[in-house]
Amino acid sequence: MNFFTFFTYLCSMNFSSKLLENAVNEFSRLPGIGQKTALRLVLHILNQPATDVQRFSESLMKLKSDICFCTVCHNISDQVICEICTAPKRDKGLICVVEDTRDVMAIENTNQFNGVYHVLGGLISPMDGVGPSDLNIEKLVQRLQESHVEEVILALSATMEGDTTIFYLYKKLKDFNIQISTIARGIAFGGELEYVDEVTLGRSIVTRVPYERSIA
Image (cartoon, rainbow, N blue to C red; front, side, top):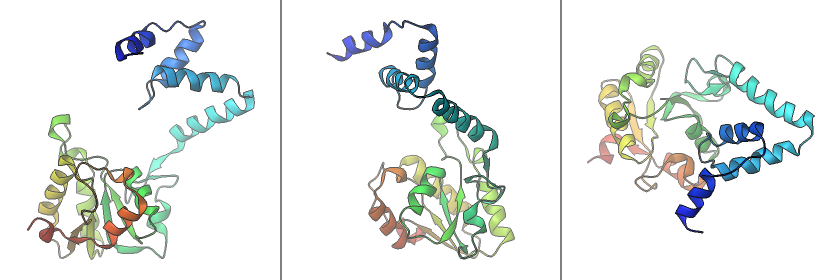
């Protein structure tokens, strides 16, 4: 089946139920989920006991209603201040700046970092209409002003947007009396942190270099 035939098949998919069609349409709005996969997921849910479906639905509603963002690092959290920020054994003088929660999880899985994080909530991307004011950059500056920080690690993806954001952050933070580092480029250009294997990512954190040296 060529692409045109497959695309036509999806567009002309006939549903025996409007409820089924609506559910498939909602699932297919999720990233990376096409109509065929959405149909398979919906049919799977239909075959589950009502109690399981109810628990699944309630977990999503509770996630949406109760989730919050840490007021310190802006990571997704169950509390006002997340468990990483409140952990007594964490080095509060070492801040790792990342794009989003997925990067926090990726770095945590390496077991190579014992500092805290600052989640920007995205990357500077003029093409997408995302500027510095749309990110949690001023909150990072505020953290440096209000607490004793020795080093900031800029752990952003090796993309054009990532490098642009790193350069902007360096200009913004360079007058603070802190070390500004970037992760070692064991990560190929264009790579995103969440897709990097744990060994490579962990090594990149451990062998980080001062930002000035990385652009020399």
